Length: 97
Image (cartoon, rainbow, N blue to C red; front, side, top):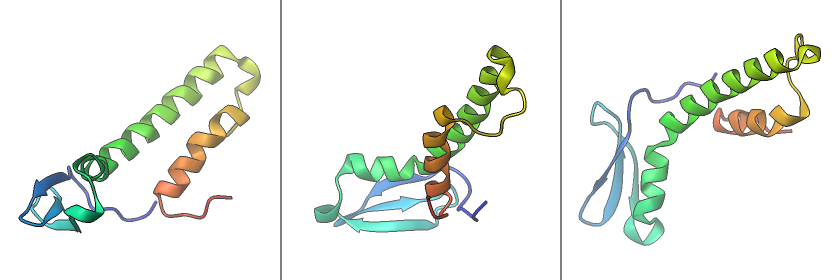
């Protein structure tokens, strides 16, 4: 997995830009107001949490699928899982095929 800035991210509204920082106060990104809405900035700040939740949800869904569908017992992926795996691959900075 790629190396990501750990911890919670938050949005601070500066004088002319949204500043996205990590839990240590380090700047992740600075984006001028004219280039980004407040909702977009909050979505970016939620990225680490969203990635973690998607990883957990994918594992849980896959496990439930295997329990409910014995023929999936040994599968590592199925058609229903592919869109989640593509989203995770993209978020990890890898090429989506």
